[in-house]
Every structure is written in C-alpha cells, then in structure tokens.
Amino acid sequence: MNTVYIVTQNHRKFRDLKRELGKHSINLQQIAEETFEIQADTCEEVAAYSAKQSAQKYDKPIVKGDFGVFIECLNGLPGVYVKEVVEKIGVSRSYESISKAQFVLVVLDSSSKLTKEDEEILEYSKDKERIIVVNKIDLDKKLELDEKLIEQEDIIFITTQSDTDYTKIVAAIENKLGLNKFDSSMHSYLTNARHIAQIEKSKQAFDRALLNIKNGELIDIIQIDLQQAWYELGEILGENDVDSLLDEMFAKFCLGK
Image (spheres, rainbow, N blue to C red):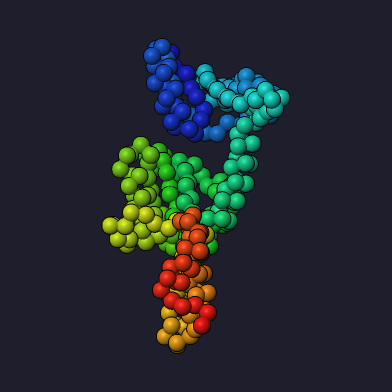
C-alpha cells in the first residue's frame, strides 16, 4: 500500500479523505500543521504550490486540495478567495447580529488556536447575556482560554459527534434565560422584543385604570387607559379593534356624564 501525506489541521477532512483513499489501497497520513497558500486565480495553482512547498519541507509525497466558488454573474467571483470573502461577511454579520441580540451563543473551535476574529467577537459580546460553546473537544486541543474568562463565563465543552451533547446546550440556554421556570402548561411564550414592550405598556395602562377606579375618577378618564391597554394587546394578536371595546363599554356604562 502506497503512503502519502496531507498537511492540514482539519482532522475531519483528513479522516474522510483517508477513508476514501483507503478504498484505493492508498495509506494517507496527516501532518497537522498549517500550509502557506498563495493568492492565485485557480484552485490548481494554490494546491500545487502548497503541495510542492510541503514536499520540499518534509521530504515526503504530499497531496493537497483546494476549492473555490465561481459565480458566473459575478465574473467568477469570489473564486479561490471564497474563504476570505465568507469570513469577512461572516464577521460583519456577526457584529450586526450581536448588536441586536438579547442573548448570544459564541462557538469556539477547541482544535484551533483563538483567532483574531474570535477575540473580537468575545470582546464585542462581553456585555451581552451569553454562553460560550467550545466545540470539537474530541480532537487535539489547541484552544487556550483566559483563566478569568473561564471563571466568570458560562462555558460548555461539546463535540458534535455526540448526539447527547446538544442537550447540554439546550439545558444551558434554558437555565441562562430562565426558560426552565415557565409553567409547563403554557403553550406559547413571548419572544419578540416588541411584543414584550407592548405587554409592559398594556400592564401599565391597566394599572393606571385600576388606580383611577379606586380614586373614583370619571369613566372617561378610565376609558383612555383601557383603550390603550386594549390597543397594545391587539397589536400583538393582530386584532386591533378599539370600537369593539367601546361598544362593550357603552353597553354597560353611561359615558360622558
């Protein structure tokens, strides 16, 4: 059986490729290091350069692959630069999502060192309610986290190879957000920030109405607060009809006197 080597830190790529090459009597071994990649116009050029450089460095037969996304309507872009483009867009969208989020799930790779982007996202999300998930703990550990971060943060260590590890994330989120305190008999919950704000406004209006009733205020004044409470609830349900409230009130009260 012939033996060849692949230089990559992606253990899953190595395992998948090893399995496939084994079917053709080729023994693939891994050199778990990064390879330098040139900026070129084709995947063949990038792969060939890295393979030659690694073969000279390790004096071993090397295989190397590369991929790109070539979109015709964009004149072949992003092409071989797909990684750079995706990472740039991904980080930008991450910041945008974090700024709007009430809760953040930060996922880190245990088999890789902390990247600049990882550090920036950790810093950017530090004032948010968050849980840090360290994935790929089944692979060789290279991730080093600050001791202070470990002490102060909710951190979960998982591998997606385990079906049960997903339950750790679900349980942690439920605990962090207090979802496990909800009455199990409830069938739906408010998750939209706008809806939560409207519920709060509705409650405030009802409280004002109750206070005005206790103080013996005119029904006209009480009516204003009840209308406001009704309106806020209607916005959530999509059933805003203040007239139906007025009809009900006219049927039971004499307004305007």
